[in-house]
Amino acid sequence: MTKKKIALSAVEALKKEYPDAVCSLTYTDPFQLLIATRLAAQCTDARVNLVTPALFERFKTAGDFAESTPEEVSEYIKSCGLYKTKSRDIVAMAKMLVEEFDGKVPDSIESLTKLPGIGRKTANLIVGDIYKKPAVVVDTHCIRLTRRLGLHELNDAKKIEFILRELLPPEESNDFCHRIVLHGRAVCTARKPHCERCCMNEFCRKKI
Image (cartoon, rainbow, N blue to C red; front, side, top):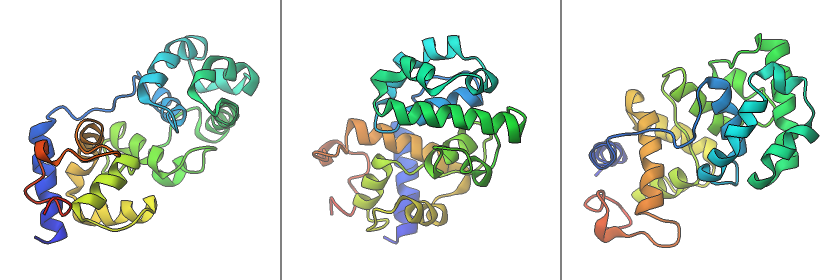
């Protein structure tokens, strides 16, 4: 099978296995998703979801964060890890949103990656989930699974993103990335891939 055919087969297999492709972070607006995704770096989504209710009760808008300090924000996010860096980025990000984007979350990867602490992974998530544009969110699960499938032999997230943009149907790419995270947690784990119960074992390069 060509890489294109493997990618298309993976899209269909994961769609059947995980029909509900949703982000596991809890949020009610674009700004909350932006903050939650920044907090999720080197931290589980489950932990972030425990932290954000109190955080978003105190800080409801970008303006609220912009008027705060990293020290105050850090009190709410200490259990997320790297909280000093994250709190500094969040306040700086909020200030830039207020000063340059009228307090609104931009809808392009180019603008989003100008924000402090925001890389292409977060930018793609916002563009895909919020603005419904084709996006490829390359996290550790995506890197591991797409490499095992035989779609590439890389570790560079940006290079992998552009490879997957060529292989995946644009209208499927965002949901594919959500589904591959679910599959990476449940079946194709980092420690050991459970090929015997994988929906992609008929065409996965690691399996065959």
